[in-house]
Length: 370
Image (tube, rainbow, N blue to C red; front, side):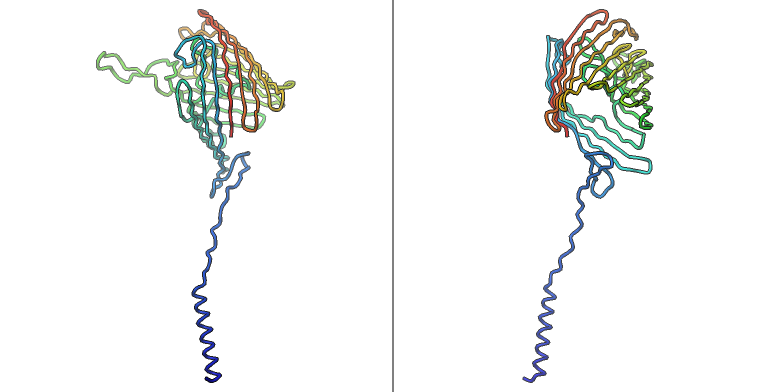
């Protein structure tokens, strides 16, 4: 074997080995980019971006256990007895979504609520709507559900007698537009009521009963109400004025709430007047109530309150005599982060002009929020 043959053979062997190694080489694919959930702080705490979008999502709610008690009748609303109590467990989930648009913030809210108590079990859609800028459309609460810090003043109802309190419709399918200038805001709203709630001025004829020949009537149809609120903030004082008109009942309601930081706590005053029973306010011709929320410690606060109603009897379409008053106290205690207790006890005295009655009522509540 000469030198030339040896060199050629070595070169061929190296080429074969190199080719085999190239064929066996493994090329790792580049990993796909991973998108982590990002915190969205544009709309407050608790929001995060939905992956792949610029929409911010927030999930919250609470779990509540509550024991209600009354001295005058069973809380199932059917059995009349000397006193009664009821236990209730509630779960609520709220999903909110927001993103910026050229027309302002586009927001939506879905509220799912379930109750389990001695009277019934229920699962239903609570306050749910979407909002673009100042325009809100959907099912949401009106002014009379706002209330004061305690549980004594009944802004959405009245003292009642025997069967419990009266109250207008506070949750309806509605359209609202709000103008907010910071220290001053105003909104106008149109509500669709289900006239099965009462106060109908006439009946709708479905047809004729084939057996009796009588007209078949129903009051289950939508009626319209309009309302508006003007709110002003002056330092530590906030005052608003509500006016609403129920076209079905052809009656109006007016109300005002004032809150002010005074001394060690906050004073809240509520007043309402109704020209006649309607879906906004039907408890009496007029009422006034006040509560004073005192922050005793960082964890404990109390709110004593008092309320008076005049002309609570409703006869032949008009308020006709009687009055009522109510006094009580509410205590709130923050057990730990996101876990709180609330207790209230109230005494109500009712004289509707024909029958006198009084009662004690209250509840004890534990609530875990998230």
